[in-house]
Length: 199
Image 1 (cartoon, one colour):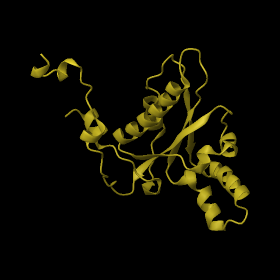
Image 2 (cartoon, rainbow, N blue to C red; image 1 turned 180 degrees about the vertical axis):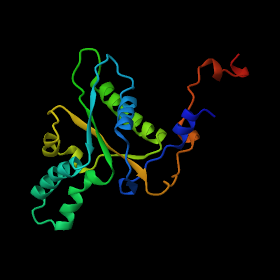
Image 3 (cartoon, helix red, strand yellow; image 1 turned 30 degrees about the vertical axis):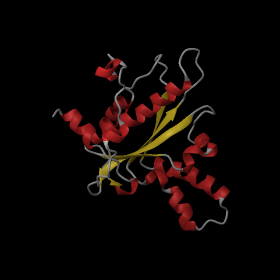
Image 4 (cartoon, rainbow, N blue to C red; image 1 turned 90 degrees about the vertical axis):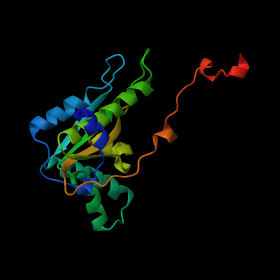
């Protein structure tokens, strides 16, 4: 079986809490983002972009998340605020995939959003192919305009997901996948449904 297919068939998500150092090298980060950008893009609009969180920047970004959390929960316990502050520090590398879909005369916004989702999926597959664990998650702050503004998003931009990447602390467990018989059907032409009694 070709390795690319093996990689596709064996990819699984790893919880951010189970990701540790080392993370991808600068060259590997470039490979990840290059792979993420090779997705279908009707009209060549590039309706997505990436924000990279590494090193101390993960905690600085976490301060923005914690500030929004404290504003909504002024009586929150310190440990709960600390949990929010560490949201983007659970893995060595976090990449925010940003959808920048806009109204276009020929390309529906839905197709642009799907392209951004494909970029996130390619990022996961590339991380797996390089031997890293990864997880695509959103959580509440992905939908909070205060946090998004602090991260430099424009009003029309949205977070598709935060992709956490790092070394697996232990092997990821497989989970049940839907049987193909339940999720795949074949469209049958009328000719194939003709029986002898119909002739």
